Image 1 (cartoon, rainbow, N blue to C red):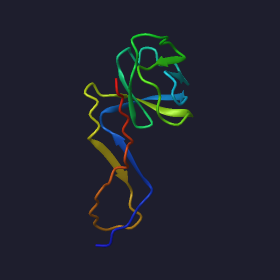
Image 2: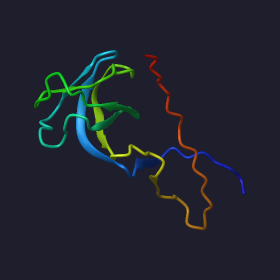
Image 3: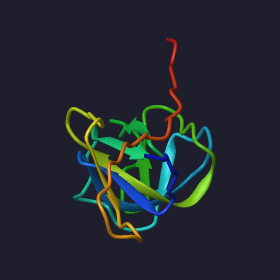
Image 4: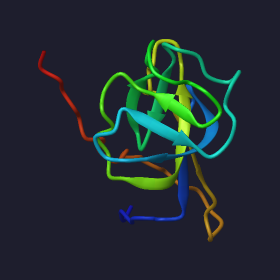
Length: 123
């Protein structure tokens, strides 16, 4: 076998529900929504933006335009960034990977998931 690298694959967590997109500013405690997510999200929910977990704050304005979070957004500022609601346990170790080979045959596939930067808070 000769190892090759492919780029036309997708990976989704089995414990995340896609909600929509948001605008996120680095170090902000608020995400601006690009749709009305009222009824889809609640205070205390775990959410994922740019593969990083946040918790919806018990304070601040939670409405059709805003999602307050308990810790500052640590990713790069961005518009139309995918927003997911994480599972209750926020376990993200189970993923579905999809790949359509261009050549017929038998394949043995080993998957390496890209690193996700860890953010630690010291209180």
